[in-house]
Image (cartoon, rainbow, N blue to C red):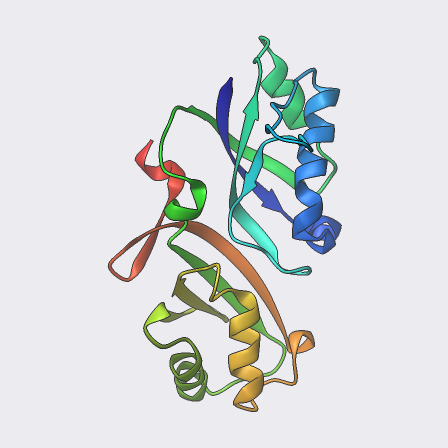
Length: 200
């Protein structure tokens, strides 16, 4: 049995595919490429797929991780697998990894880019995020016309927490007032996030 770590981007219409629908999508593409997903044990076996932190519908992800297990890796199957995905889901990198920590333990932080529909006072934005996220807010930086927000513990403090914080402070009405792009998920190193593939 082989464990693969996949790094993928989710853009365009695929950004509106719910997080829970991604494992079947990965497995359908794998079967089209001749790959056989390994199954879990128990009364109701299902393909072994572990995704990174949840990505809400409508949020773009540029470097999302997932672990998948396969019984075998025929020659050339990985390249066929890359081509079998629908437009909007792009595989950047696939690494075969052995035993090691669970993906959930490795995803310690995430980097988000905020594109605001209307100008927002950045001091008030920073204060709102600090009040809502506390020590999970690792950094906040202007990047051209965008705002980069770095958060620890992405399972608890993700895009939804950002929207809740800004809406609670009266800076936005809701999701319709901004676009969020998650640019990286990985290990926390001080106030930065190191993508999981960087150490490989």
